[in-house]
Amino acid sequence: MYLYKLFVLCFLYSACWAKEEDVLEFSDSDFESRIAEHETALVMFYAPWCGHCKKLKPEYAKAAEDLIRNDPPIALVKVDCTEAGKDTCNKHGVSGYPTLKIFRNGEFSQEYGGPREAGGIVKFMKAQVGPSSKEVSSVADLEKFLRVEGEVSVVGFFEKESDLKTAFLKLADKLREKVRFAHSTYKAVLENQGISDGIVLFRPHHLHNKFEDDSVAYSGPAVTGDINDFITKNYHGLAGHRKSDNRNDFQNPLVVAYYAVDYVKNPKGTNYWRNRVLKVAKQYQDKVTFAISAKDDFQYELNEYGIDYVKDDKPLVLARDAKNQKFIMKDAFSIEVLDQFVKDLLDGKLEPFLKSEPVPESNDGPVKVAVAKNFDNVVVNNGKDTLIEFYAPWCGHCKKLAPVFDDVGEKMKDEDVEIVKMDATANDVAPIFDVRGFPTLYWMPKDSKDSPVRYEGGRELDDFIQYIAKQATSELKGYDRKGNPKAEKTEL
Figure 1 (spheres, rainbow, N blue to C red):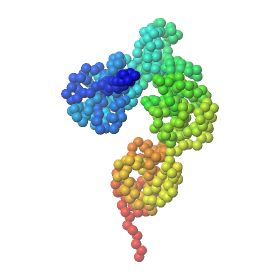
Figure 2: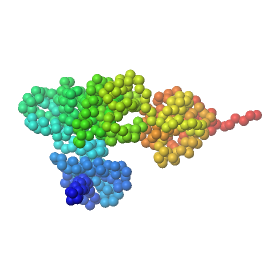
Figure 3: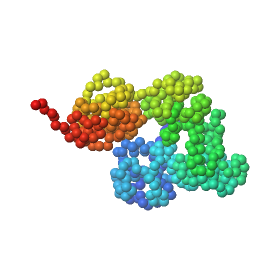
Figure 4: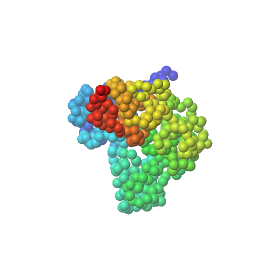
């Protein structure tokens, strides 16, 4: 038993090590010669201390293990920009980490703009080699193509040259990084499908179910845009498998069932719950988007709903409506409960979930504190022009701005202007604000609060005063329109 355990540990260790070994490391001394050995290569220029690089590293290694076995193989390379690869990084204009670039036969080809998790990297890079649409010459080849990747496939069947074939191949070139395409002109393949000039979207075998067809035929005109719309509409079916690399495909209103989705280790159990979602989804397919997601992969989304973990094996259902408001299905999952939840969502009968800090007991400071629950009162309906800062407690730039912002509040305390701050990490931010970094500031005129304007000015006290003085709906009492203090009136 001891030897058996030792063998298993050694095997697992070597497997993990092999993943690291599949990523090639080049330096200034050998980059030019070694990169030229590879027909297609993805190069990660990195710094060892970079947090984003550390996060990408295991995903990159997983992708390398797969791609090195591709036909033809695709090399994944890394270059340390702080040590042995400094000159190479400078030569290729690397200014941030990680930077990823695609090389072909030793020459730079293009910037990498794909996903940064293993599955997405693999899919993106496989699309970089070979034709955008694979030609299949037999029924066996077609069956192999449809099964080998376990993904949606779009296949064109053409007896002869046609406008539809031209539009199909043009779209394949455009979407090669997102969709698997194939085509055939062979008589046996066309007869097997019963098609002489047509396009069919095939769903992967593991997603086949009794609620929708396994394939969908295109019936529109020979127009690239129309074919694209057909693919977009049918790609994920009634309830798609939503993953980190395709999450943006699923549009609101959206209902997602989170549970232990795993089509590798437990396909039967995964489909047990998906089939129940599908039964409800079929009734609302033109009104709501449905999806399933692995709860562990989307823990950050659960956190946005105030959920630390999913307590049992049943799916947890969360939703967003057309306005991007959030909703939680509070009762235990069942077909009946899900059906009622979706009806209430569409009828506007559900109470939105707001991630919010408690409303402050006192809010009399020069800078008012907004939280999600009091946002309308403090910001939207305050009857004043408003300058609001969205910040993060850990943000260094926010900490530096804090005393300046307090000074702005003091200067504006007798004006028809409100200075407000809100912790955007602990409170839901309204969709009209585009908050991607911290601090983010917006100006909201009192008569048009639905059209906030991003503040792009300086961060010193005078910068804020001059901006507010110029933008204020009514001229300030203490400052002219240029931000100059007004002379105090004295009594005679």
